[in-house]
Length: 113
Length: 115
Image 1 (cartoon, each protein chain N blue to C red):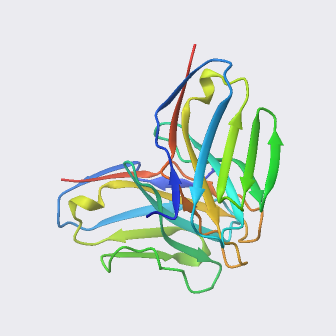
Image 2: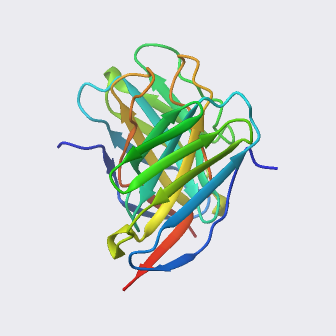
């Protein structure tokens, strides 16, 4: 079993829909949680990061962490065609020793007109 | 350049040949990481460098893989005697520090195909 599980999709939604992307994990040492967006043939770019449990909002994006359930989510409101990409969750048992991230496999999202 | 630069962007090599992949991090970034991305497998950690400390090589899949970072800047990932299962996108990332809340900036990757 992988340390981080993520549904690969593809997930197809109409423009304007609310999108929910999720990851589960098994390592209780993970403290630092991130979401990356990756367009085709490009490197991943950081969208959101959170530390420990709770919610964090940035524009149309909300990241949510539930450590008790080992479950993280990314919500995208008013989705746009430009949001079509692969979304990768990543996490780290940060101990001051580096940014050694463990990634999910990524969820491919398509927002249709 | 402003971002992480990787070269070549694409590499096709014959099985058994050695390849070198290059990463030019953002100027001033002390931490540098290599990841591998295979189809349906997500990003797999390979190695990271932080300043003058010994690199964390715990993710290298075999002794055919090695990496070095010269002068705390440019890094080269070398794969010897390439195998077909080495085909993947190799991504490099750098960050200004390994402290918390530090973003890792990724390059565009090198797409390696072993035929």
